[in-house]
Amino acid sequence: MTGRIEPMVGRYVHVEIDGTAHRIYFEEAGRGIPLVCLHTAGSDGRQWRHLLADEEFAKDFRIIAFDLPWHGKSNPPADWNGTEYQLTTARYTETIRAFCAALDLERPVVMGCSIGGRIVLNLAIDHAREFRALIGLEAADFQAPWYDTSWLNRPDVHGGEVCAALVSGLVAPQSPAETRMETLWAYKQGGPGVFKGDLYFYRVDGDLRGRTGAIDTSVCPLYLLTGEYDFSCMPEDTLRTAAGIVGAQVTVMEQLGHFPMSENPAQFRSYIAPVLETIKQQKTS
Amino acid sequence: MKKSDPVSEAFTRLPAMLEQGAALIQRGRLLDVDCLLGSTEQAFHVAIRGGRIVDLAPAPVLMRVWTFAYRATPEAWTAYWQPMPAAGWHDLLALTKRGAATLEGDIKPFMTHLQYFKDLLALPRTGAAR
Image (cartoon, one colour):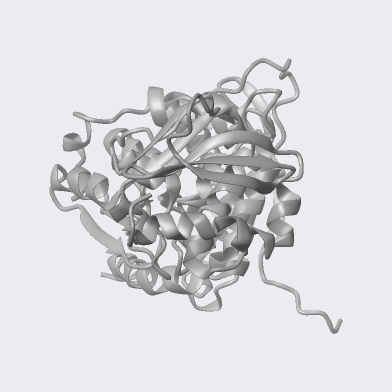
C-alpha cells in the first residue's frame, strides 16, 4: 500500500443501556491506560481524530472515542419509534459506564468536552472509584443559556445550517480555517433534534450546582480545562466550579474555544500533554 | 447621522463590501428582509433582496417597518471588527449574551440565515467577504 493510513481502528460493540440493546461505534488507537473520550452535544467521535492519531500519546494510552446513540455511526436503538430524543443525566451516565464495562476497561480515564465535560463532573460525584482520572473540557456545574434551543429543530429552519451557525461563534478566531470548517461540518450532519435533545441534559436535567462540592479528588483526580473564547461555558464558569472542589486542577486555554480538540488540535495538544503525563506518572508512582 | 462616526461609516460601506463577496451573496440568495442594523447610537434600515443590500438608510425613516433589529454599542462593534477580536467580543451572540447588543423583533429571517448575518456584519473586519 502506498496510501497513508491513520492508526485508529473503528468497530462496533453491542451494549445494553437501560434494558435496551444498542450498537455503539467506537474508534481506538494505542495501548496502555484506557482513555475514553466523549464528544460534544450534536457532534460525534470524529472530534477526537487528531488525539487518536497522536503516536506519542498512543505509546501509553489506549485512546477510545465512541459515538453516543443517535450520533455519528451509532444509530438509534432498533426499537426506537421516532419519539423525541432527549438525553438525561441518568441515561448519559449509564451509557458511559455500560460502554466501559462492555470493553472491560479497568479504571479508565474519561475525558469529555462540553456535555461530556458536564457528565465528567457527575461521574466524579457518583462514581469516582471507577475511574483513574477525569478530565472535563469546557466543563462547569452550570452556565447561563445564550439562545433558545427551540430553533434547533423545527421544519421551517434548516437544522444543520442553524446548528452549525450557532456554534460557529464558539470556535476561537485563531483556529485554522480547515479545522474550524471540519468542526462545523459535524454539526451540519447531525440528525434532526439530536443537538437539541443533548441540550436537554445540558440546560435542564444536568444542573450540578450544589453537588460538585461532594467531589473527592483524592479518590479520583479531576482536571478542568476551558478555552478563553468559549462564551457558552465561559472560563469564569469553570473557575467558579473548580473553586468549590478541593484539589481540582483548572487551566484556562488561550486561543481556544468550545471545541479545543477539533478546532485547533496543535494548540490543544500543548495543554493536554502535561495532563496526560501527570496521569501517566500517577500510574507508575 | 453623526459626523465622524466610524461605526456608522462602516455600516454605510457594507453594501459595497458585500458586492465583492459572490459566495456570501449566493448563500443569501433566498433572503428577502427589511431589518434594522447598526449601533445603539445610529441604526440603519437595511433592505435585503436575494442576498444583496438594495437599500441602506439611516434611521429613523418615517413609518418604515422592520422585521428584526440587531443593534450593538459602538464599543462592541469596534471590538467585534478588530482583526483578531478579544474573547467575548468575537461573535454576534457573544455580544448579546454579555449585554453589549440586542436582538429584537421577528428573528426568524436572522436565524434561517444566521451565518450569513454573522459574516455580513463581520465584513468591516476584513473589508471583503469570506
